[in-house]
View (cartoon, rainbow, N blue to C red):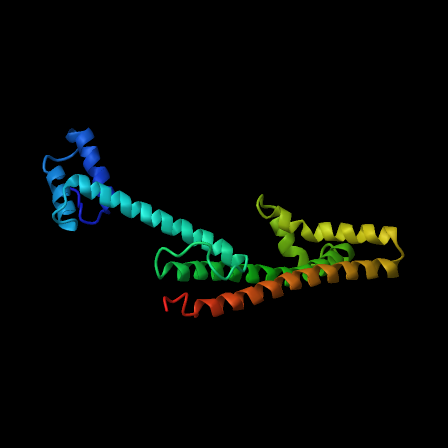
Length: 215
């Protein structure tokens, strides 16, 4: 006989429905075993009431999940107070932690972007001056793989942009234009990074607030 004790209430009810739909697929005592486990979990309740209780619990879990997702979006928009009351004392904390994870990933991503922009320009200059440089070897290897070839082509694309800029302007002005463009990109990335770092600090302070911890 299958081990029914490790199954959730919903799985037990689905199993019972399956037994009723096709009794030949189960051993004769399976239905009695499932009912016995359900009665142990919900003493003094008939089967119809057990079904209603399980469905009510599932709806409550779904509403809680929806509230946490909505509250996480509000926190990412720096909305201090929730639009609707939390379903329980811990839900707000879960939403704050989810927002912290999201902003933390954004900070990590933007740190990589700040480092990648000047590196990409340097690789573009190397590609333009010495395409056989060992610094470009990893990117040349990436060109052989379908999912990495776009990353591998970045130094080549940047070199073409540099060559195009030098073709349009004298060398001094072209270099100034390229450096200025790189500076603007880094400055924009840093601005986003600082914004998210501040938001991360705000969320961490909010996490220890009494209102979040049920105080």
